[in-house]
Image 1 (cartoon, rainbow, N blue to C red):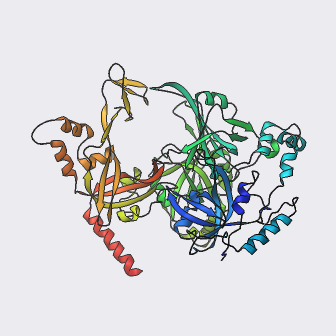
Image 2 (cartoon, one colour; image 1 turned 180 degrees about the vertical axis):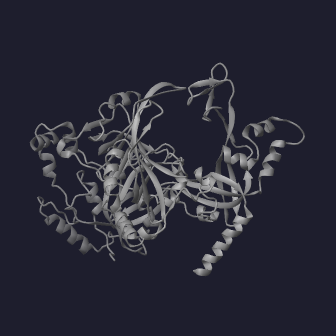
Amino acid sequence: MQTSVTPDAISAVLSNPSFDSSSSDRSEIVVQVVDLKPIGNRYTFSANDGKSKVKAMFTASLTPEIISGKIQNLGLIRLLDFTVNDISSKSTKYFLVTKCEAVGSALDSEINLEGKSEEEAGEAKRQKLDHSPVSDVVSTGITLKPKQEVVAKSASQIITEQRGNAAPAARMSMTRRVHPLVSLNPYQGSWTIKVRVTNKGVMRNYRNARGEGCVFNVELTDEEGTQIQATMFNDAARKFYDRFQLGKVYYISRGSLKLANKQFKTVQNDYEMTLNENSEVEEASDEEMFVPETKFNFVPIEELGMYVNQRELIDLIGVVQSVSPTMSIRRRTDNEMIPKRDITLADESKKTVVVSLWNNLATGIGQELLDMADKSPVIAIKSLKVGDFQGVSLSTISRSNVVINPESPEAKKLKSWYDSEGKETSMSSIGSGMSPAAKNGSWSMYTDRVPLSQITSNPSLGEEKPVFFSTRGYISFIKPDQTMWYQACKTCSKKVTEAMDSGYWCEGCQKKDEECSLRYIMVVKVSDSTGEAWFSSFNEEAEKIIGCSADELNKLRSEGGEVNEFQTKLKEATWSSHVFRISVTQNEYNGEKRQRVTVKAVAPVDFAAESRLLLQDISKKNNA
């Protein structure tokens, strides 16, 4: 293990405006982690080289290494990839560390190299003075360009000599460092990204209380396979709609980022991008084109139930069991006949699922799979929609991508399992054994059972995607003064606003009604023997908890009388035991990420089922 840092590394990096951490010829940089603190789902620290410090932040991808203890306060790390960013409100800089490795355990104190003897300091000063001014390497081991090279020619002269009359995008790539998408965050200053348009939405018109407008979005993918969704409104939408072409590569700068709305996001990224009319979008030249790496986030077939009828798209890998002939389906919207082909996939969970390929995937990839079905190929599919046909079914969409026999560890492991034992194993459909509740997307109340302490003690749960559990507990408190419902459209259940004259306006239906209904949106405190947590519950689940509709409860609140029927109804709902199916996600509040626990389904306790669950747990412990 290493016990020393790289002296003067920080000052050398900060004094070099052209420093590039991804350069292959730079020396290593080892710093000490000081003042390690959690901020939301990330950690900040001060990078110490023994002589100076700089504020720094680890990206969320490094949080597991901090929680596991690999990266420790006062420990040493080697910086493998990082960017130097400006703090917009101050004239200071900070390091955003995207990749590093721990090279030394926690020391007893901060490293301080300033306390050396006068002889050592004098010798170091003489070595520095004796150092050749034309050398590219200083005593720190950090590669720097000599000052003469920077001021000898202007940037325009250098670009003209190297590229001639290069295209604007080529000039952008020469004068700005391209940032990987994974390194972007809302607090950065200027940045430039190089991305391919992998999906382009249609221009949509909208109307709300502030007026009318238009919007469209694109999905962007960089060379590493990281994706982000970019949205443009009004002038920006009209400016860039024709410029963005599917499959082309662009340099983009002067955009803004914010935390992504998990309810509407279509890619795996904590942030979403907004481009305005001042943003810069330049098409890359032919020699700068690239094919992005496809990144998958596979979901096992046995876990598909929790994604049924949800907005979130999933990735799947499986062994092809069967392939149907092509069939033609008449589309309801325009009566057009479109091709469809069903394939059945299996994985190590010994479950199967039917995937419907549509349009070109049905006739192209589908025919290829039919020709090689007897060889049981492994396929990986990105961006599948999960429906409830026959319990669970999957369908491709326009952005879906199918890879046959991918060169990945998951594919090799799956193929090895299938060849050795899977082909002789009895398989069952994922939809056949599901309970009615599971077919509605809530899965079984008796799978993944956890106590509340397991959720509240792990603040990183739900960072990447929602996680689902079942738990049993008591409603211990309901705030009577909270906002317990919202005014909803009787047709689509979306929120309505009061019209100027009378009635209520629904943005979803684009119409006005004289009446509206109330729908629950409330929080309740749930307790068990291990702890307590606040659960968010919506209309159907809240009605089961309270025992009446929101309209009925509102009527009780407005009624007078000696007995407060409203308070009585809330008290009747407390200290009653329920079984909950919940999802755990991360939401941002006042700049910090917090856990949000949402009730997906609620049911009274089935004591016979609870007894069987206890017996199963006892049996597992006895066999362990």
